[in-house]
Length: 162
Image 1: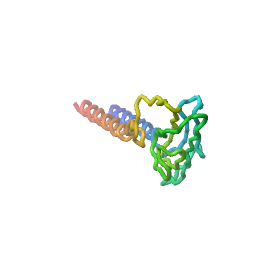
Image 2: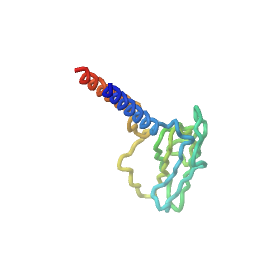
Image 3: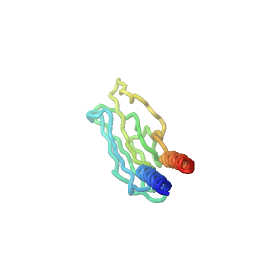
Image 4: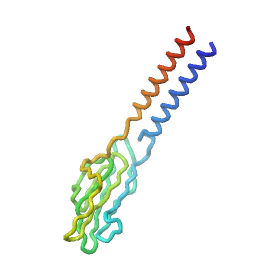
């Protein structure tokens, strides 16, 4: 009987830990999306960029817009925006000096500038997709750990009955 209680306790602890891992990675606990803006070249000699907000409140369906603005300096020419994160474009485009977006996740936007007659260094992994790559699904982790715990529990019960 002690073994059955021990196995049940281990299963409960493992399942609880799995749920905590999934909850820690879930966006549901956030109150806002973070907006960060940069520019290339980073010394700002050819231009800089800004946004009208540094965070957007999260609602059931986020409706907060963010306006990104690139400002040329000296003989710099604006080329494009490179944006990481999930968003919808409301006005403008990735090649517009000013564009308005609706963030659906944290956003990092870089404005790229070049001097006349030169080509700016491109990122080592240029990505024209609007979304950042998905790195994993927390629910798969939960199901994997739960299945492992269930397997250990079944094995332990069979050993106890033998």
